[in-house]
Amino acid sequence: MITPDVFKDALLTQDYETMRFAIATGFDVNTVWQLGRPSFLQIAQTMNDMESLRILYEAGAVPDTPWLENLFKDFSRGVIRTHDGSAHNPCLQPGIRDLTENFTVLSLEYERGICHFSRGMHTIEITLKPFILDGECVQTSIQADRIALPPSLDDLLGQRFIFPRNPDAGYIDASLYLRQAHNPVYISSILFKNFVHDKRQIEVVMQMMFDFEEEMIGFANEALTLEIALFLEGWE
Image (cartoon, rainbow, N blue to C red; front, top):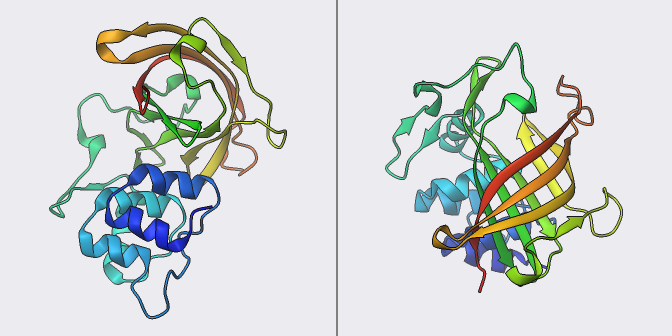
């Protein structure tokens, strides 16, 4: 269990993996780590650590300064602030599509995947190419935590692993943040195909179901078979 002091240390050392792990296992980012001391958000603001601030925002942190309120409004519109405080909108780049009228998971572009091994469990993050929805720029990703897999690549290659759905033991805790909601993503299987040594990537096929109806965001549930290469982090 991650304590407030451990989370504070992860914040100060910019240990984003520990921060994400703590949040995935139920840590409340609005916890007061010590009475009379700055909040986690205020610490990140003082450090001007935009990555930590975005992690805290996505975890439901409540802004407690006017600057943070404005920053969170930018985050909700897809505006990204860099470490020097400047802002840019990724949806101003050429080729960004407006999916307001014809949104489907098949029209999303799955740009980059990372598989990280930590504390005996795996996490997978799949970044989506920014897109426009409801007149706002959306920059989001599929975050999958608590994936029980063998630690050795030799035990993965050529194997398909089947996973139950929540709340059965062994399920993958995955979601897609969209329309101000963490929408469940049920990953039922992962097939590990080829390992690309020079790129430290493994090609996988994932069967998943996007549950948009639970949070009632206006889209129907959709199934997807996704083939993507995952960059490996934290593997021996």
